[in-house]
Image (cartoon, rainbow, N blue to C red; front, top):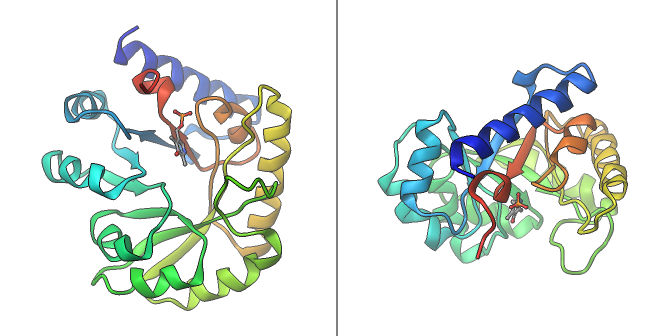
Length: 216
Ligand SMILES: *Cc1c(COP(=O)(O)O)cnc(C)c1O
């Protein structure tokens, strides 16, 4: 299947998920996750109308950002190493996975503000990044106080299981946490679970393999 057909399928699934819960399609941003995808493929997705792309490694992303059209909105979805935070803030528009206070200090070294989300580890899975719920309030306060990051909301990763309802439970919890801390955005939902994420209120779905095919 080609890129256009895959994108059409993703778009159909987004519309039907929105429709199933009475949401407006415009309330969901599709972030095409282009890690491991080459510049030509990203350009092809751009030519088909995609403007938001997500990358998880700075070194891999920099040449892409350099080469591709400047109206792309780049989302950093990976872990934030403090020694790379300044460069991330200079190169990306949105950062999805703030999970430590000390990252803010390094993000602040860039001379422009970035939209930021805090990643939350709701099921305390040890291989996942993200703050635990009991530490969320404190980090939200720090982000709000940080002049160089605009606090936008929360992000989480669903469960790596075939039972989509487990991810639904996590997404519902994230939406509840988001309401408590004044989140405008909820970044949740990937290839396997973006439809339920939309049903539970996701504003930013991060979709890679459904668009670009399986990663090697
Ligand atoms: C790779 C990645 C995605 C996209 O995953 P797919 O299953 O290919 O859609 C989304 N979010 C994060 C944080 C990722 O690392």
